[in-house]
Length: 587
Image (cartoon, rainbow, N blue to C red; front, side, top):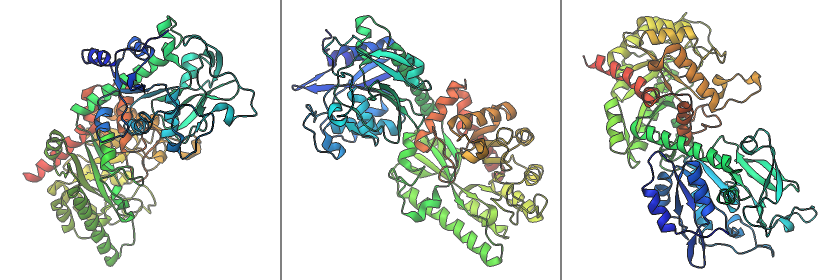
């Protein structure tokens, strides 16, 4: 029989644990006025290489939850009483057992926060139900009531907790299936189960009667829920469930390492189109469902800085239309400034020094760029005007030729590369310290700019044509030429530039990593970075918004990149070019 443990003693011991062991928060049970936890939970975590700490429940969630979540590297949602159906918009059925008012609202809020912050999670029994309830799924209040016409396995056994009592069948492509096999025996003492897993999970294991026994993330997050009690086997000398805990601890360890990288490395996304949404009533200071980038999501994803661009679709080129394009760019740049000024602990940045200072001060940074030199019209003085406004780069064109150059898409090869005016624009950008961005340019424009620019050129959001044969992407020859000239190419996360639609396979974070590693192989570690194109067309499963950017770091760590490598990829290379351009302008 497993005995309850001394919570205070466990948490005190955790403070003295080795620093290289991930800290795993375990939600504590609460009944009869006492905080309790069966020892199988912490013993299994310790045996797998983690440091367990117990999280006491609170009747009302509060702001301190964020601080709590930020201090742990993994979250284990433990078993216990039924969830109050009121919290899921349901009335109780007669077979509902005791609910736990101390735990329910607190753990639902805790789970949502951990999900947004990419914290690896393992839900056990009640824990799998909390995962589903917190993230859009449903819970059967009582299996027999919800499935009256089914021939049910007995899910609430009287056997000892470490004794397996029925079989589970797992999907072969699931984590559970890979770790434990496609058919294995589990213990069973519950009368509730997940009904529908919701949009963020898929069912990966069931018992013979169809009851859900395991769910896993559909968003490529490190989250697994199981209905049985795997923590009960290890204390009885049975290691059959240890692969599940070892997998959990491995993910928590990787997450802890990624967090340490982000603590010491300045992280910059070189391109997002968030200002496109400014006329839709969005708020940058809250977690806005319309946006992939807002200030809460930046903090969740451990992103220090982003470059918000004034994007201008290519339009007509009459004098009046180009004047309107200039005015629109000015309006968007001013609105970026206003929105940043109204946000706490966020500041505009113009130089690398600004970014590093803001990170030390605990502030987020926003830089400003222009996507499409259409904003310049035919007035070369607009280059200096935008430099004075703090613009750090201008993408010379977008989709379609303009007065500056030919585009990679919707081009008539009007200029055969840069126009005469385009050469003047590049020279003036060199003079004023604005980086020359060739992300959307035709190859002819790219090579013309490379030849005439006196400072290295950049591609703020691009991908590899060798891996995805799209005219918008960079060839290996372009990458080598860019690197030889000291420039930088930033991998973007737009699915159409990562994988062709006719492949029939949707792009994911794995494709983004694949493109970045190819960039490194061809151009070298000193000439690559990340420009997501969030709120434009960017965002793929596994790295779908700013809050998930730490997942990219985790993948790059798994590829063998060092902290020094990551410092370069996450902005160091980009800022080197920016500093060079700005220093030359000051001479």
